[in-house]
Image (cartoon, rainbow, N blue to C red):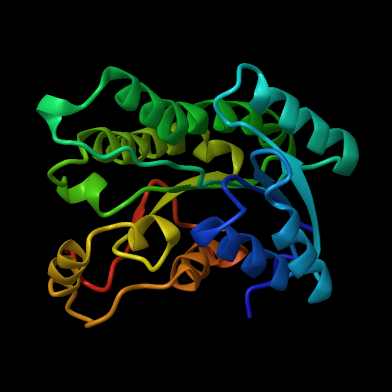
Amino acid sequence: MIDLADRVALVTGASRGIGRAIARQLAARGAYVVAAAREDNARPVVDEISGAGGRAEPLALDVTAPAAAEEAVKGIMARHGRLDVLVNNAGIAKDQLMLRMKREDWDAVIATNLTAAFALTQAALKPMIRQRRGRIVCISSVVGQSGNAGQANYAASKAGLIGFAKSVALEVASRGITVNVVAPGLIETDMTRGIADAAREEWASRIPLGRLGTPDDIAAAVCFLASDEASYITGQVVAVNGGMYM
C-alpha cells in the first residue's frame, strides 16, 4: 500500500468532485492534507477525513487572488515546517463556441486553471528545493489532449498545464522534485453532470472500458505520483480516461 505518512499535501479545489476524492485518498494513505477551497467550502471534506481517522485542515483560498499562493505556502510552512505534495486541481469551465465566447470567460478560465497553477507551483518550489524533495501533480483533462468544440478556453488551459508541467519538471529534476500531470477523461462530477444528456451519451459511447470514470479513479493516480514508488517518473501525462483518448 502507498504510504504517505508524515507528508504534508496541499490540494486546491478540494471541496468537491475530483479534489475532494484526492484529499480523502491522500489522507487515507497517511498524509496531512491542507484542503484548499474558496471561503470555508473545504470544511466538510476535512470533517470527513477527521471522522475517518485522518489528518487535515481547511484553507480558505481564492487561487486567482494576488499573492494568495505565497501567503498560503508561507502559512503551511509556519504551521508544519514542510510541504511535500502540491496538487493543482482547482478549475472552472465557461463553455461557449469560439465566435460567441466573451473575453472575460476566456480570462477567468485561464486565470483559474493555468495561471493559478503557475503561482502555486512557484511558491511551493521554494520549500521543496530546500527539502530536496517534492511532488507536484497538475490535473489536466482529456480535452487538453484532444480538443473539444465549445471549450477553446478550457482546452487551452488544460493543454497549457501539460506544457507547463513538462517544462518545470526539466528545471527541478536535479533537486529531487517530480512534476507530472493526470489527465482525466469523462468523470462523474458536478461539472460533467451539467452536460446535456445527449452530449454525455455521445461521449460515453467513445469510452472503450464502457463507463464514466469516478473521482476515486483520478485520486488513485495522484496518490501514486505523490509516492516514493513514483520517484523515477517526471514530466509525464498519466491519462485516466478509460481509453477514450489514446
